Image 1 (cartoon, rainbow, N blue to C red):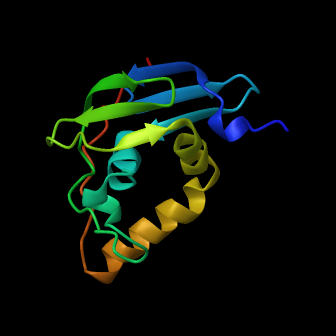
Image 2: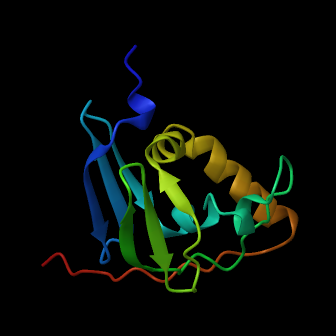
Length: 131
């Protein structure tokens, strides 16, 4: 049986300037995860709760930064965010799931923010002259 969900990534890169964590797997699958997405989808109990339906909506995370990525054995990474959050262990299977379920997870997150009247205020992007 070929279980790619637990296959170690072949490359993990922290791109601070573009504010993404890139993850590549041996089967050619690649994901570029925005910092806000990783923070709001953290697998920690602080975010996910201790059971189904107990997840805690994360607000004001649109400008969060990743300060470090640390390996955890041969099965996960720990992502350290500049807001102090560092308790989630992102296993290889969880990273794949975050990639595959991105559209649904992101839409649900934005809908929940809208439901409480929270307006995201992402950091303005720099405009680079074309000439």
